[in-house]
Image (cartoon, rainbow, N blue to C red; front, side, top):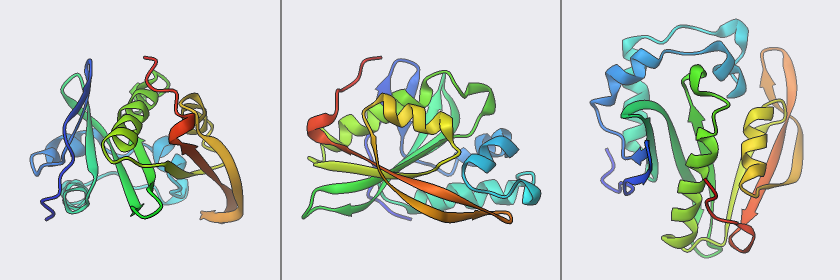
Length: 184
């Protein structure tokens, strides 16, 4: 397991913190949502309920990664977020996050998490640029990314195979000079 953990970041009842083995039960309680899994590129026909072993493996993978946060809302695990593919020469990284509780989608939590992560990335890591990839059909995520200032920079046509269908991946980016900061 890695020892290079991220700091705890808080915004009201929303908290980003390092993963811990005690997250297994909370991740198992979240289960897998077919809607969320599809937005992440999982074939809906291959959807499977989350097992306790799967929850443990998910937590252990998260614990092994650098710059990984667990997302807590009202002191309850609801997802994860991380920065990866750091290039400190160019001062850039790639962002990814997932809200895994379908009852909390559309409430602005993803936007708040983005602000917390971007503030830390631009101020504490002195990054110049943050980028991401998102499936073109994931309109809710795209709206959150645009809300904090990300712009579409390109499209990888038919880059994702979800089931038997090919889908475009949008490439989005945000420069430190474009970031408007938290408005929540």
